[in-house]
Length: 200
Image (cartoon, rainbow, N blue to C red; front, side, top):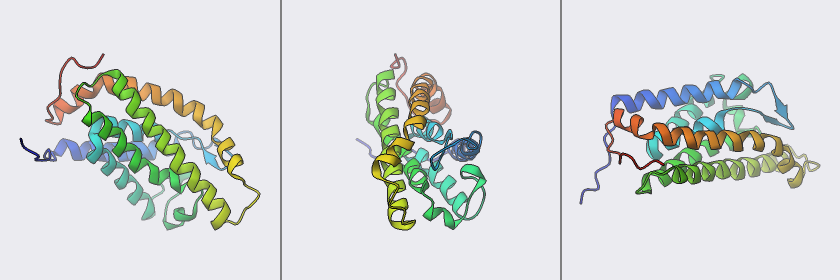
């Protein structure tokens, strides 16, 4: 039994760059809409898709690339922001969570022997939960301890997430269906062995 990790091909690097770019586009396509302190973006959708289609390693790498590009100063975060000041932004936790979202989503699918749509659905929604738990708790921490806004309670922060949650639940369902349909095609082009006729 071989434990050799799959080799990284040129197409992997292209897909990593593509998903990093999609994150930048998704960050600003609809981010003019803000609820509380939360811009409404499509980043969660693309982070989940990155993990589901590229796997845990390449999916999380795409998110790391995106995060680093923004932190060095390029305006790729929501509302065309970027730079090290993002560390103290209330929404920085969501940016960090995208790495975990992609990794865990990809890992669940990789570990599943049968790539059925139920597997993709479970993996994608676990990714969404990680996104909200990490992001929302960091937001509360930022308001309470970095900004000193004690009036912004734990309940208020979660209430702000109610409206984005409706959008993200719908998009996560879409991500699960889409990724289950194109998973084998994408991995065939990447030179990965996939089990045919298992998505149902």
